[in-house]
Image 1 (cartoon, rainbow, N blue to C red):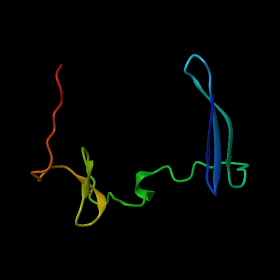
Image 2: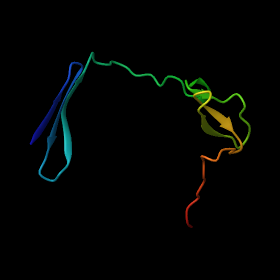
Image 3: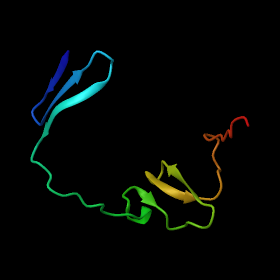
Image 4: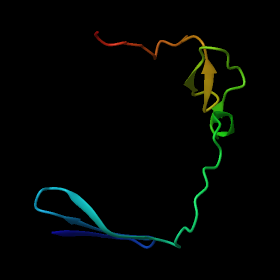
Length: 87
């Protein structure tokens, strides 16, 4: 059985075998990419992230006022609850 998805920018054809494994037969999306570079490898270069106040043990938490993920060392919000699970 073949499933075909068509749009203006991409075409994907997926062929499903009898053992329920999906195989991608053909994918077309715009121009072919000849090489890929890793780009930025530091969290400080990510958009939407402010790590200027980071210290040892900091974590990222979304700040809705700034619309950014910011480096925090404490949770001062009633909206967050940490559950470490059962061990």
